[in-house]
Amino acid sequence: MAQPEAPAKRGRPRPQSTIDRDEKAYAVIAAAGEAGVTKTQLATELGDLAKGAYLSLYRLRTTDRIERAHVDGKHVWRAKAA
Image (cartoon, rainbow, N blue to C red; front, side, top):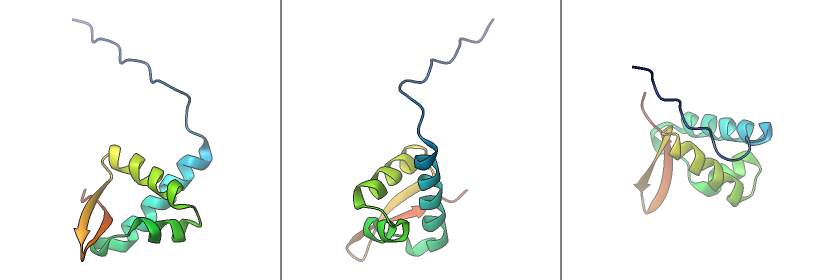
């Protein structure tokens, strides 16, 4: 029996600058280790607004590369263990 085709992706492809920012965000989060990174720390590291950092966090979370934790009264983001 033939496999059904995967549905076509919706919307336009992401610009390369967005992909690069997401990869840089992941590198910062992975380098932080267990301590994690807050959204404002990530925005500072990226030299970006908090909104851009949050969008990167959202995309990394939905692709299951990072997780959110609550540490010392703050939400921090950590790389998921492979």
